[in-house]
Image (cartoon, rainbow, N blue to C red; front, side, top):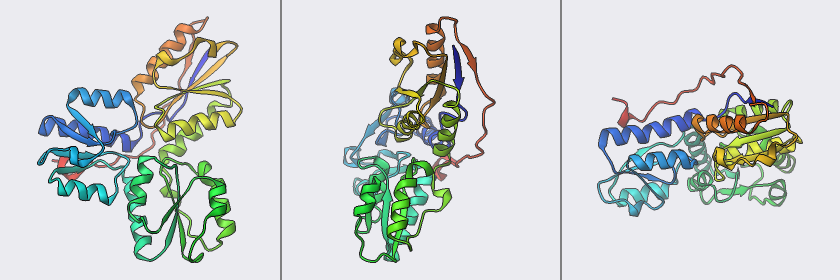
Length: 309
């Protein structure tokens, strides 16, 4: 059985940066360090940071006065920042710079009196944070049907923003409806789409050309990981989301000659390695691992000023 690894896969620059922020804050200021929401959507990462002294909370009022609070990579609304200020806590922002860019655009449209159609998933923490930057002007659009039903005050003053963990493919059908209904709509710039999401989806498309089973290492809460599973299935290939190697069901491998393995942007490589090792154990022939040359995505995000010295 061939085991074909996707490239790129796993951690993106925003996740790398967020995890490093928490680790450096723990090393520099000592535990406990509070983190608003899971720093990234991965149980392995969160449990590791918790063991080092990170405390994950949702409400800033749960943070003691004067303590250090870090905002997760998904970003927060102004209301969360205001609550932290009232609580008189110190803060460090680990929001992914690509998310921050969308927040800035939402504020710019809000000031200009432009309504916003935000393409994203209801309940996702990134979407909640973005909507909080222009709550009176943003309407969440999840599906083409939502786009068909969207009502706006002035069709000439409408813009689109997207959840960063969606790709061009994810948003194509919704954008098509919006463009048909509102010809003057302002579409998001190409660089608003997360490079890591698009790259990992392109890598899965390549996997499906050879694999008859795709395993995606990631958490159920991870939007980009779930999209990878959906993409493989749309290509006609059986696909499963697994958090750990122990979740692999041996029956999945019956009749399979090639397994493609990838990981969402918040899944560490150590989990991928464990999945590959488990597949080699289960393969009758011990498995033949094929790993393409790693792709250098060429993106590195600077740490916040509080941690740069």
